[in-house]
Length: 303
Length: 83
Image 1: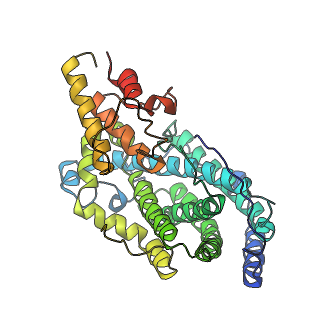
Image 2 (image 1 turned 60 degrees about the horizontal axis):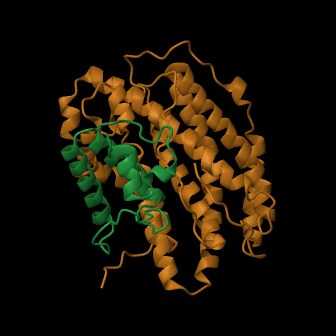
């Protein structure tokens, strides 16, 4: 992961609203009240039945396409195992990146109020990274490598401060769509349901926090009165959502499931209308929120 | 990839992919810094690597190489497409 960090300090006052401080106190109290020891909270079975569903078939990247019809049920179940390992691997890599960004801002000027919750956030995210990695290593013997490469940051630290928390929140909301479905699915092993349930509960606080930060930091960007900048930020976030969703279409998982020509399968899936509709459903809560708050702006046709 | 024709075809597909994403460009010079000039950015990178993996038939091209291997057309040819 290459990164050329810029100053992360914020101008005074951006996050100084009393309502934000009250929200921070409420979320911090919830974190304290819900505190748990992850190393004692999970009953790890010796094995997960390889013939069981490790992920609901309806969440698989092939679901709703003719590709799914050509695979027998045993292959779909194997694919579910490897797509679940891909999902947890995406979590581990995503969490590592967001932890770096948050730790870089802990107790930096402008983040005094937010830092009260950052400590809970960092601790909880470290726990999540541990139990997702533990699941992968115990039951699959590996994590999939990080396919994302960070090769630049926004030149303006104020934009980067906003984009960091926008990326974090979008990532958490995408993951939460899957966590919610997997936590409630009785076809899955109880250990799988538990890690998804625990993650969902913690992430509900993180998403609430992230959304509040996003709105305040975006309001600060809006005060510049630079419409072209706001359009570029909006366009970047649309591209970020697309790139994030594409991580779920993993050639590594297809390869491990024994599927021939995994890259060709991926290409076909990414152009399939059923997948576009599913991906839009995964993102709907996020796009609705960002549209309602003016963060996502209408796509302007090139002149 | 040792066959000259397939290397040329592979490079053509890579260049076509880059041009399709950058309609303001009509060519990709050998020494154009693709990252500095934002021909590819972080959000494109995973897709770009998959394109390279598909045209070379090799998996996990990110293993053991630095981002500089992807920085110019010449570097890509030298690292991934040459015999």
